[in-house]
Image (cartoon, rainbow, N blue to C red; front, top):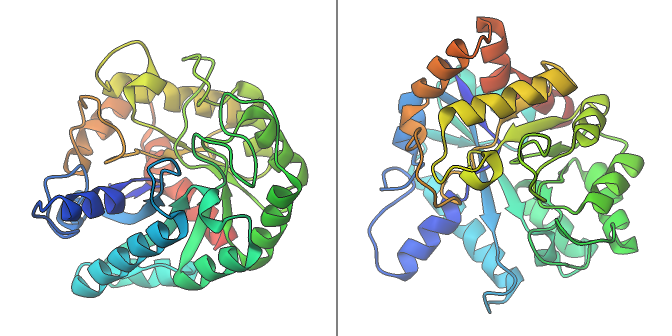
Length: 311
């Protein structure tokens, strides 16, 4: 079974490992994700997020460019396995050539310092998706759990992103900001790594009304594997992932649900362990009553179709 995963933090984890003198590369590492694990599991595409914590004390623009340089360096060193995806034609080409497609995203719109010129620069560097906020307020708007929607700058960013062809990601965005995006977006947007608030009352999760709005917009929800978003258990249980996927399908339809693992950005015990064990998710979906066609939709087809509409 092919897979498309809308979010991981592997590049940030790799940079942190390099800074502390640990061994590892994007090809092979003791992480949730590396290229060999992805290839072995049959992935078609992996979104690689450049995650920047605004309160870690580093210059956010310098940090995101350092992460981007590491990403492109690793792809250049692994051309036999991986291919960058800047357009849907690139994704199709990667599939024909039996290579892993790699799509670059940024998790934290604050790296642009509120300047559209820096947003355009990130696009030129290869970024095709932007998470508007992480867990802190920035020039674009308020994060999950905080009142207040998009700023005027945030609305200008959304308009420019749609002009460029950069996808708006509402994971981590506050509720008011979500509805600002839903009201103003003229192109499909997504939540790359979020779960369902009806099943787990967490500020990072999406309400049923949000799921319906995403479906109406032609959007996508990548279900997150983090235990705190799934339920009350310390470990990330596969049955809970399936439960959230089922809820997304029941509320928003079969075309809304996708995978947004958050691998290498989550620190809980995982029944799936890493990207090399995705066969366990397939078995759990089968046991959960999903048809073969529905499983294909969740694991890759919905994301593939979304990118055909947006990239």
